[in-house]
Image 1 (cartoon, rainbow, N blue to C red):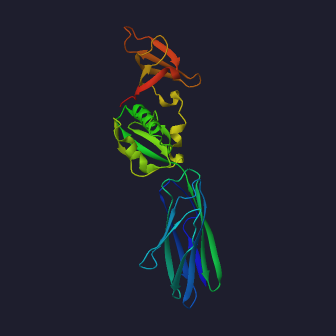
Image 2 (cartoon, one colour):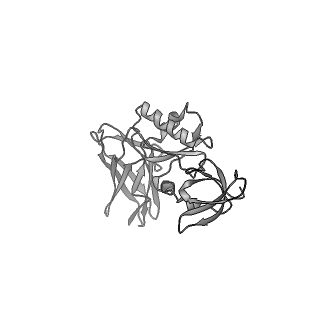
Image 3 (cartoon, rainbow, N blue to C red):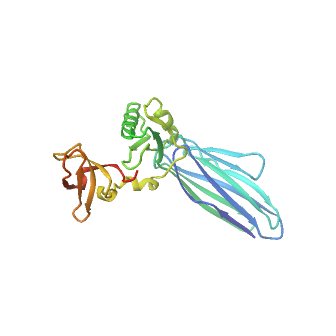
Length: 277
């Protein structure tokens, strides 16, 4: 009896990245089985000439490799002998085209043909954007984000979709792109851009940076703030009271000769220093 398992069926990866799939074929019977493993591709591409690379390794010494496009789509076939009560692992790597666009999709049907019938499974690989973190000089995050955006626009790099400098994250800028490999060359020559953090993230991993926390929830009694609007704009002060129900903060100005409490809306201050830091 032949049993087949697969580690993953759905992938979302940036252009030029690898989807790694493991298919395990187990022979539960008492005699040797010869099985045929097939990979058939169906591609949905904006540019039909782009190539996907499919490789099979791990069963024999030589690697079986196939390049497929929407226009030229051959079948990759692999024959395996599995002794009784043994199993074989097949390692498949599929690389999406480096010039693929968001939404391009590769649908790969895996088949295992054996004496008792056919096992089949569809694996879907969709190209989507990824988030790359760029290290920056602390305090220069917004400047670096602006320069990255301007440079990508100047060079016509449509693979750069967005640049984010979160107010509550120091020393990093996030770049959304379908081509993570381009970010390092993009930041070359940009002052205060220090490098690229290895690896990519998905948008879900930084969602907490996309929804700003209300100012009043980030401020505590004793914190040092700067007033950013009103007659005392630019003055620094210490927080002495917080009223969350009214969204108001009471502060004492450092520059005042006599400490006089001033109550302002939470949005009228910018946090400079947490108490004790």
